[in-house]
Image 1 (spheres, rainbow, N blue to C red):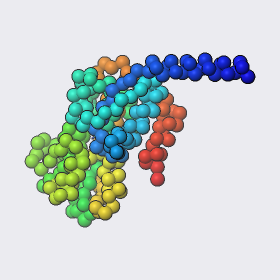
Image 2: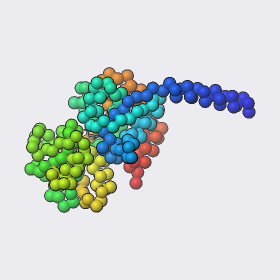
Image 3: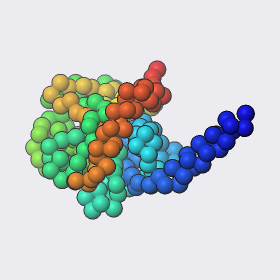
Length: 244
Ligand code: ARG
C-alpha cells in the first residue's frame, strides 16, 4: 500500500543517513598469523578480521584494516595513530600498563611445533636446543622464562612465518607460538610432517582488542562484543574458521 511504501522510503532514508554518519576507525594488525589474521590475494582475512568487523558493525563503525606488522601495532596504538588493534593479542599485566584491552574474546596457550620424530616431547626438552619465536610475543616471554632472557638459543623473528621457516631450514629445533596457529600450520602442511606438543607449564591466555590507554571506544566495543557473543554471531564466525 501507499502508506507502507512511504514508511519504507523514510526508513531507507534514515538508514542511509546513519550509514553516511558512520565513523571510520583505523584498525592495525599483523596479518601473518593464519588462521587468525593473514593476507589472501592482497586482502587481510581471518577469524579476528571477521570478528572485529562484526563487533564494529554492532557498535556502528566502519573499519579500515591495515597490516602493519607486530611491533608497529604497539607504536601505532600508543601514538593513537590507530584506534584499535586486533592481532591475537594476549591480555597481560605488562601490556595493561600502556594500553587498554577489551574484555577477553578468545582463549589460547603457547604450543611447541617440531618436525615429526623430534626428541622434544615437552617444554623442558627445549633446553639446549635452538627455539624460534616471534619477537615480543608471549611465546618469546615463555622462552625467556624457560631458558633465560636473551639466551642465545632463543632466535627471535619479527614475523611468525619467518620463525617457522627458520625451523624448516634447520636453524631451530622448534617454534613456540599460539596453539591455533601452529595447529593450523601443521594441519595445512601435512607434507611437511610436523607435530604440535602441548605443555601444561604454558599459561592459559586470552586475546583482547587493543586500544590506546583511556580510549572512549573500549566501553562501546565491550558492549558490542558481548552482543556479538550473545546473538550467536560469534559462534557463526567461530564455526566458519574452526568448525570441522
Ligand atoms: N598471543 C601472542 C601475544 O600476544 C602472539 C600474538 C601474535 N600475533 C600476531 N598476529 N603475530 O603475544
